[in-house]
Length: 354
Image 1 (cartoon, rainbow, N blue to C red):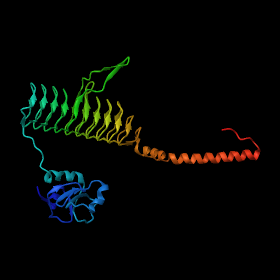
Image 2: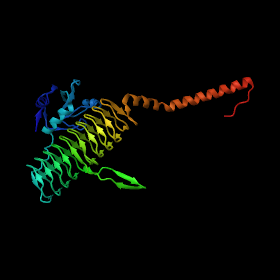
Image 3: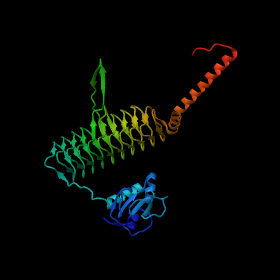
Image 4: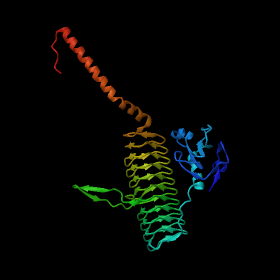
């Protein structure tokens, strides 16, 4: 679809600086954009690129008001505004026709809603239920008694094991495993005996789960992912973890068993969280943080062991001065040694052996 800058501004509720009648035919990143395309700036570090971008229009925050060659569209949230435009002038979305591919294997007593699409070589076990409009990609495995809600998109090579419950409008990317056994063993005389994991996983509505994520089933009861949670690639969520609504979990995070994560929490990349603790609502856990105890609501923790950000930064600042402090101590020791020798010479004392 082709749109003018004015039409785009009307869609996103923005104000225009520059030409209003330029035709936009595509979208791109600010570095790669060409004439006829629209891009956006949401991160301050990309602001200098505004002068060199080849884009014909740029969606920008309200505080950018300088005149450049491209037309500017000022909005409150550039990322959200750009997302709206991508669906209009970006590539045509891939669609899947309703129906069951002839290579799919469908078990007994399976309930399929209206307009469900089952792609090639998918296996759906007995007593499974899939809601209206859901798309099940190629080579997906869905276990016995599992329920999947409406308008879900399950990409190829996802494994959803038995007795799992998934809400509506859930997106699961390739390679993810939902409902694998929790890591539970009892060690007796050096032998590890497996503890049965008989619980389940429950995923709420409007959840998106990245590629190669593992969400383990509970030992008892359920591992729970709340409504609106967004999980990046390569995340491990252990048995009986509870994640509250609208929390964001970034790539390579590991959450140990029976941990409770509150609502609207942000867990940054490569953070690790020990088991059986609570992370309060609206908290932020910094990248590579190691969380070893409860985190109160509304705080930002970083480092290992994780502390409130200001305290961790102070400790890091002192740590960076260690080489300087060591040198100062060496110089002081040398001065003290010279002073001791002078005192000994003055009073005729024999030097002490160190």
